[in-house]
Image (cartoon, rainbow, N blue to C red; front, side, top):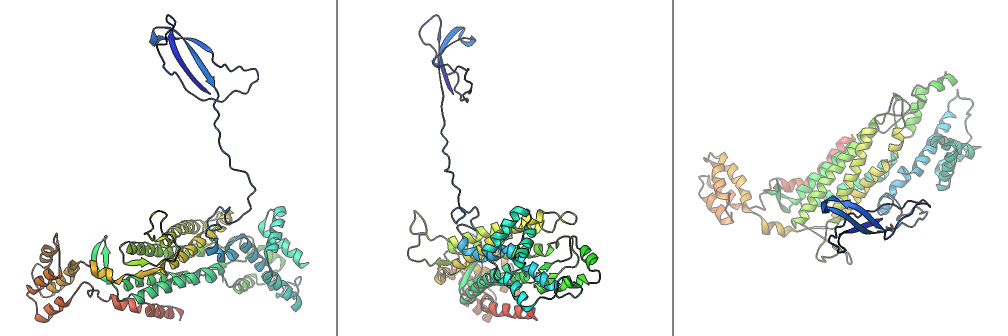
Length: 510
């Protein structure tokens, strides 16, 4: 409701004040007997005017129209998905879906239940589960091999009744019967492809000189290949660490003691049976558990992936910077648009996408690694909901790896750019070191006087070297030195990175 008022003196009909006393909004009272005035007179005292005044007010309702979204019963699609992994980026991460989706969870529960049933049939003491015929074994294996979306939906329908996801799988199998693969099969190949591409960059550009920068300032020259070799070696090392994490499993009853097992079949060596069964699934058996496997291995796994991701963030940012410095140019495809308003631009969007997704992945993986090893007493259910988010951390990681790969394949090194902008003052370091070797006094101070605040050129460097008291051969060597040849062992390091990593990986495999 809006209220405005103006006042005039009772002794005069002339409006001598047009002060707006108030302007406010209030909801209309919904009472049938309540009278809301309009264009009403109001008499009151206003001491600051020194007399009585009357005012005329206009009271009116104001209605603010708030547009509402059309209410639709949206079906899940790439356009309606809440997570960008299931929407915009689905095509790049869908390979994880068979392992980390609700469907994947149900499938692997079915697999374990069937495999355990087959294992029980092989234990002589468990006479209630006799050996299955070959035909029955084929049928049971077919429940695993032929598991499909309709089966998963049937399990979910059963869960609506049982309100228990594991029990729903059990009932599903009753009706029918009347490793962590997501890392090994999906993530590792893309990691390996990424490392290989960076290795190729190192070898192809092993002899390409590049001005290094420390604290953002020009430093000793290196080669583009050697700097790429640093990243390929870092990523390869962490890829190995990830592969060394042992994925564990438990099968020891409700709280890890085989309580019910030993009461029902006291003559069976249940710890041995459980160990054989867990290892038959490609897992490492953990004999000391509660109701759940403690998940310590998951913390190690996710931390290892986070370190890999962090090294790749470092790579993404460096490449972004090298593109900015014109060490690289990006090859574009016909029809691609770099900027909506600046047609000359080609933005490093693949490396920015990779960096952003790696940060998102590490945030999720960090929570998983911190939370999963903690469970109250013999078990609480907080791990269950958190475990369902593994796909998010791994999905954003996979998306980042693919984005980085896409960006790498667009890069072309600009060899000539280094030679055009190289500062000759970088040779102050080797000259100073040689001066120290031969006992030339105050080497640092003399080079400082030459280089600080002055334009250092080939001629000024040559003149400085000529004036040094050095052996003829040494002086001749320094005179031949140029910024693009002063790269130390960088060329050899860039060329040998692939062979070095293969050697290291081979030794690890022994």
